[in-house]
Each structure stands twice: as structure tokens, then as C-alpha cells.
Image (cartoon, rainbow, N blue to C red; front, side):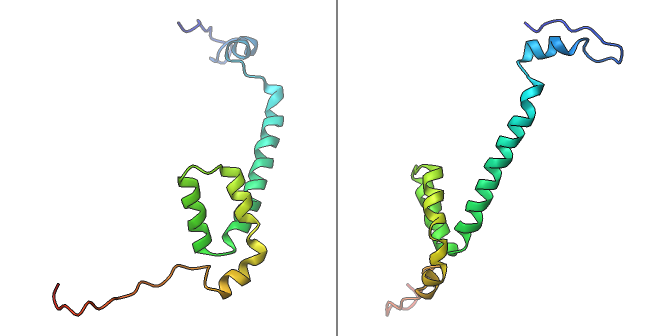
Length: 110
């Protein structure tokens, strides 16, 4: 059952204390929550920048691991550590997918 609300002087609910008390919202914690979110976003942005450097193939392998249930943060951090090896990975062709091959079977039309 929803609590009754009274109209305040501008048509809104009367008394922000009632709203805060009912919803559990604490306006004093808002800046702290925003800082936590911003800090987490900076960390993820850093990981994203490092993870994409080695190329599309390592990124694909990361997605496969996550799809199989690997821990998100451990996997992201592990793949981010590949960043300094990006040139080495590229030199060996590990940064991209293998080109598709056409294999002749010797049978025409089948």
C-alpha cells in the first residue's frame, strides 16, 4: 500500500523529510556515490584503452572467456597486461583473425 502524499506549496509532495524517510534516499551520500562511479569509470576506461591495443583477436579471446563464465575484473586486468606486448603480438600475426581459406576438393559442383 502506497503512503498518502500531500501537495506542497508548489504542487509537489509536502516535506522532503517524508520522502527521504520513506524512500531511504540520503542526499548527503550522493556526492560520495558519484565519486565512486566516476572512479570505477576511470578504471574501466583505462582497462578498455589497454585491452584494445593488442588487436581484434585478443579482444575476441577475452569475449570468449567472459562468455564461458570467467571473472570479469580478473579477465580484464589480465588482458590489459598484454598491452606492452602489442607490437610483438602484431609481428606474429596474433592481433588479427586468420584469413579464410578456400580448399579445393577436386569435386565440381558439390
